[in-house]
Length: 362
Image (cartoon, rainbow, N blue to C red; front, top):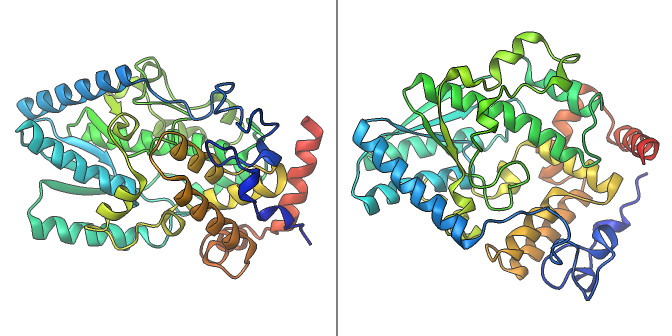
């Protein structure tokens, strides 16, 4: 039986400026974690000058696209942030006095939440009723995504970071963003937006740099575990020149506003109900094996930057920890267990295996 005593975090153990608990992210100094002391790079942020520069660039790109009749592409997962982004872009059209078409591109993956398709269908219905300038497109990877997850993540053939949540998300995000970019170019767009919230900045911040867009994205470390044809689904500069922006890194962003305003279009805005199931599995494995977990760092970043109140962050975090502890909760029945059953895996065995791997490289 796995020890669950650490699943309850006391408020007095938290960094006084954010939500990181000292027993997992310590030692603290003067009550502050290393991030709040400016001693690590997690949760990078933009300066006000950088935010203003990116905001100005975005306005210019939107105006130029409107003049040239180039549609705006948005990666739409069906969750709160990507849906909220569509609303904010339409508001930006009004603010700038321009008109344009928005093409929403959804990549369907086997570990997506069951709530996302109903969300997108409801969004389509509202868009039609309101006669909004939005079109929807759906694509699927041309290979077995389950095998992608199994080979690279669950069997630990590739180890980049002890926290496997980031291995999963970084590799998968490169792939999914590539597929959206590819489809956007096919549809005549070279200006692409993703609704990453401010805490999702461990890969890029504000935009995908031109330097990154000048190289193929297929990671060479995957050569031995993936079918070579998969390379065609990873971004290549030969596809064409694009700009890829993450406006919630530099526009005003509030977590509650994203949740509440996206409800105009979708039925379920709770990330616990809409996030990728593989993310939940890896976050729980990280928590049980290294005492760190993506939601702690995400909520800490939102609190640190003022995008979420500390009281809300503590509420969400304790809610998630209680859901993890209860094996009958939807986190297990709707997210984690289906993946374990698909691969005929035991959670306890995964924890044991990962601990041994961590011990061997520590």
